[in-house]
Length: 386
Image 1 (spheres, rainbow, N blue to C red):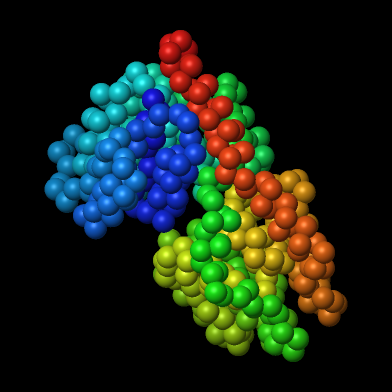
Image 2 (cartoon, one colour; image 1 turned 90 degrees about the horizontal axis):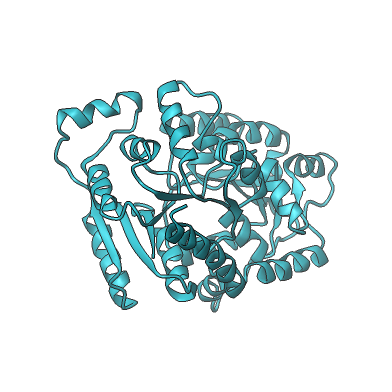
């Protein structure tokens, strides 16, 4: 049995991962959904009931104040410890000898401290949606918290990553069992459902190039520098900056002030929408561009590939996509195309090759076999007491 722990606030992503494990995995799972509000709780209860699942536990957010002792544990970190952190730890304590897999880096100081002390015998972690460097940076202000996280990290049985760059970073800290796995989303099914009766919009000569930039508010640190690179060609562009999920008002104001002062045509995408609406909105853009050096937006890149868009990346994202055999260019190349008045649109043959390769590599059956191989290994380690 694998106890899968998810951050319930990320409903959009969590439900897709749950569907994958319920439909495709041959391993027994028990799902722990953490930190949900009342509306999310009802949504998850209905989700599991619709699929005939009873193997789950939901931990809701609490509004009461923490006892003084636990409040003292928050002095090393800006994020506040909450009662649901304690509830999560109490629930997992009942299964401390079982295999527990944290999906994403959301465990609190309290849970990290318990892992570091070796309280749990078989903890594993999936590094989703953020780079390894962000989770365990070499230089952070809080040296004490860094040490706690590092000890917790080294106590883990298995570390899972989505791309080679994170895999290499994590080997600096964890040399035992690191594995690359695939994104657990049925993109073909989602796109078919969302685009039923709709057509992907193609670029029309003489109109501004519609460019979707970034992945969420987490990419905001790169937005201003990208805008400055594109400023000489602003009259050719219609930009959209993604600020959904997480945003900083100060950073957004700094960006919009610059864009307004230089007369850009732009929009800020700051709403969380359904997956169908997300895909349909995505389909109207001509270019997907991301200026982040570390892992982010793998889902957005996937939709761009499947919808036949020209993709410009940098850093780990570029290396990873290029290394898998896709045709992709750098952000700097996009700027050069504009500067030289060259076509920025990828050749139709390359877009078709990208799309065909994408659907081969995202086969749910193949991904499930790879996942189950790793999950079975975790169960064997547990049975052997390794």
